[in-house]
Image (cartoon, rainbow, N blue to C red):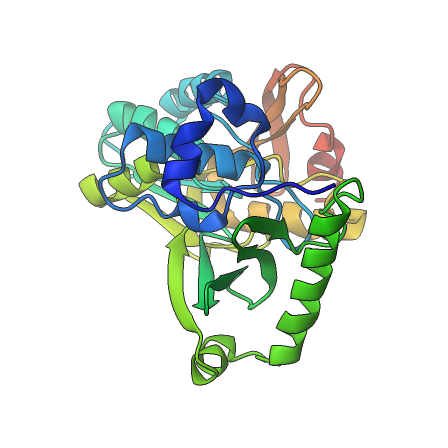
Length: 314
C-alpha cells in the first residue's frame, strides 16, 4: 500500500475543510505563506504545524487560544507587580511558531503599552534544497526531515513513515541514503549549491506573529534555547510544554530551572506548566522570584508537575 502527498496549494485547497484533519502528508514548503497570506494559506500553515515532527522526534503541536486562562492569570499578577507605564521585559520561550505568543503579547501591550516582548524557540525557519523536480526540507543544522518527489511526500524523521505504507517507507529509506551520499557537512548550503541544488529559506513563524512583529517593534521573534540565560534580565518569563521529563533528564531540567532563575529579575514572575494531551487542560504554576528562592503565588489546575525542582533546587 502507499499514499500520495500534498505538495501544491491547489491540492491542499481541493481537500475541503472536512478532510484536512486527516489529510495525507503535506510538503513543509507550503509553510511559506508569504507576507500577505490568504485565509487558506494561514490554515495550511496551521495544519502542517499541528502534525509536524522535528529531527529530535518532538511535535510542535499548538493551536489558537490554547493558553487563554494562563494569559489571564499572568496578567492579573503582572498588574499587581508592575506599574502600567513600566517598560517591563517579557519572554515567552519554546513557543513553536509563535501564535500563542502573539495572542499573549497583544493582551500584554493593552495593559503595558511600553512593554518589550520576546518570543523565542530553537527552530524558527526551515530550508528547502531542490534539484531536478525533487526537494529536501532541512532544519538549520542541515538535518533533512522531509523529502518531496511528486507524487510522494515522505518524512525522514526516524520511524515516522508507518510500515502499513511500504512504498512510502521504501521511498523514505532511499531518500535518506541519497541525502547521506551528498556529504554536505556543516557548511551544507554552500555544499548543496556547488552540487547544483537551489536553496531557499522557509519561515516557520505563524503569519499573525510575523505581522505583529512588523507592526510593533516591541514584539520580537528570535532563536533562543530554554536553557539560555538572559544577561540583562527579564521581568516575566513563560515556559509552557518544554521543561518536562519526557524531553529532558532531571539533571538537564535542573539546569533549565537554574537558567530561568538567573534570567528573571528580583520580584519577577515565572509561568511554568504543561498542557495534558488527554483533555487539553493546562496545569501551571506562577512563581515569584525572591532573592534566593521561588514562591508559588498561584496554581492553575494541579500546578506544574515539576514545581518541586524550582522550589528545591535553590
